[in-house]
Length: 424
Image: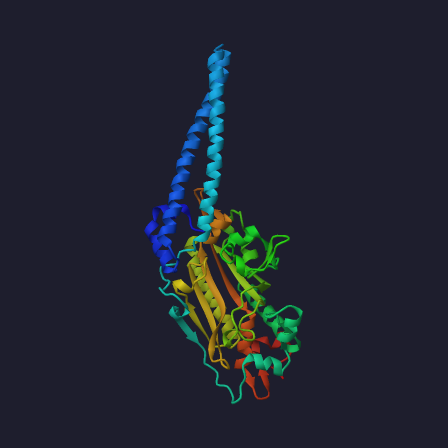
């Protein structure tokens, strides 16, 4: 979340950043929050003054009793008792207003980096680069939702029977393709210096708040209410929360972790070509990469992550492009996001398969994730994450782009993982 000193000292810049993200009523909400902060500081000052007076009186009481000035001592006791009642009431006010401030801060999104373009929607995103040739398909080429039925490798109807819409069964060569991609992505991450972790796929409320999914995406997460646990929308949540409330030694930075998990998201969009088949699901698999770095090195790390993700797409021989998201299309917690999209030839459209984001101190402030400077002062670290990669749309593009009249060729880099070269 945003830091109060930043709101106080850079108010106009904060409002401008929130406006760039198309956050409604930015000026009014910042003003209201700063008013709460002013009240908090006044109450805190009054509380501390009374507390100091009570402490001084407590010391005087003993001296007065020793000197035989019982009447003055009893008066001091009475005043001390009254001061304690007043400080208790002020402490309760302070606790209440601090809770209000925390709730208000949780509502404010992260501020965008200066390089983020202005815009309201995906149409305003900036294309940074394009790579690869768009494949030309044979006559009669089919979209992936028809290919998976033709080759009987993914079953949506069975998933709907057992769980509901958006929970497909992967079968035969479809299941093996899933496993191959997961292993390939994990192996590549390890080669790139990431430590593999296998995290839990449910998290507690504190973890959801720590990385910013709560309260922003409360309604989009599956919530096991009996235990107050949430199914994760991404491995970013448990992997980043490994370091909640930690002071990380500088010699351990940067931290680079990668993990595979299923991901669960309640929203799956409306019916149409954009969400048919594997384009949008309630449950899908993803390998996530997470970095925790010193602030001055985080944007270098983001470029490295972007290049790494692009390398995976190149090895899979998929045409792709990189977008710098505009303010209105960015995630709640992000300061700068690159989206990677692959071209799906049978659908004739670009499909997002990865987002790589720098959150700067936004998550670290919620997580109390810090390091100690040479002077001994604690400072917030920067956190980053990226999909490397999300499987459904990668599978969709592989199936569509590599189809032939007599089968679907698999990318060469996956042959050793798959044990076959063609789905037929």
